[in-house]
Image 1 (tube, one colour):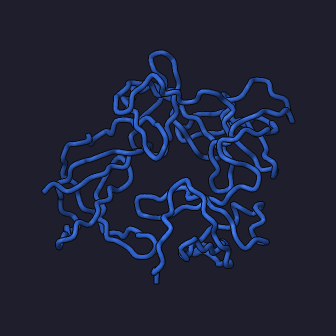
Image 2 (cartoon, rainbow, N blue to C red):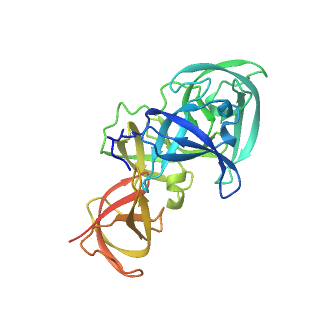
Length: 305
């Protein structure tokens, strides 16, 4: 089927997709059928993009938002008004209180974008005393699911005095929530500098405010981030893991590859690539593997021969 040379789809890059119709997903929500430059079909839920006017279009530019460890491709259509890393004016509405995952009360500042869609940011990130309708200029740092994420601060996560691969001890201060549910640790160093790390990856680590957190500065997918030390596993050490299942990884443009699931009590199941040569581990048995990396709590392993 794929005789012509394939165009590689790279994360964070934009490509033109043809809109070929709509279908209903298993949950009965409607989705657009998009055809990528290689002729491969993708489904895009339509509800988050209701104000993009995709119904009247025959094509749309989409960014490859990410390709996960199972090979699934996540698309983000080009926003009709905003571009990443550009500054825009937003209108302040009000502040509200929410309850986060640690049962802490947070104060959230509400703004609106050009479509009247709410943009939620932590109130501590904006000046005190904003009036309804007051305009504040901020940078669009992320667009996901049609929602715009804006940062009104300067010099966020300044890693200039830190080195990739080195460990640092910080204190977990509190959680901050962006959008509806994108929670971040606020980690503070001895000099009082603040850093933010996505909370969802480390939820099972059991960290609480006030705890000392040893983190390694890492660089992956074009960004710097702090990786809290795993509660159990260390890179370059070998462990016995329980085989708990078998799954399949999507291989673009079409096809699947066997992967094995290993138990991990402190995050998502560990994925072990099939190694061929009649490599068929038995469910419920232990297999010895070496940890070769830990990225955003995902433990990357290879079998020990």
